Amino acid sequence: MADINTTTVNEEKYHALSRAGDFELSIDATEQEGPSPNQVLVADYASCFTFACRAGASNELDIDLGKVETEAEADINDDDDLTAIRFHMQIEADLSDDEVDDVLELGEDICHVHDSLKESLYADVDVTTGAF
View 1 (cartoon, rainbow, N blue to C red):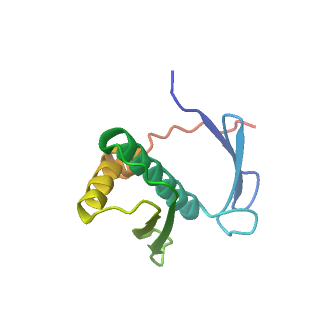
View 2 (cartoon, helix red, strand yellow):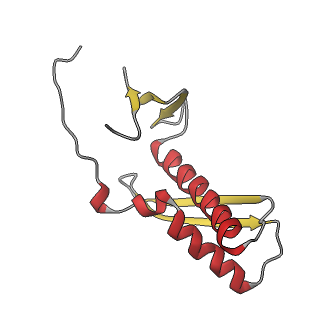
């Protein structure tokens, strides 16, 4: 049995409603009825990385980061494929350069999205036709 189950329904054009647990997310490749898939991925990565930095700082370094704001930006090529992602983090706590390095290293180690962005995690896809 899977640990995570989601359902995505696309009835026309490039808009989909995805359900994860009790939550619904509107995703639209044209950005008319929701964020694009790339925007969702970048936001998810930034959120997960932020949480991972906070968890690592708190649990491993005994540091309270206070408020953290992570601005993410990404580059896409002519095929709308992501080619680069950059984060700019603003952290309320006054940290030394060594503490910043330690927090970022823990963030990379703990962040599930960071770990997942690799070819070995490509989706295994099966298709049922004539389903509706």
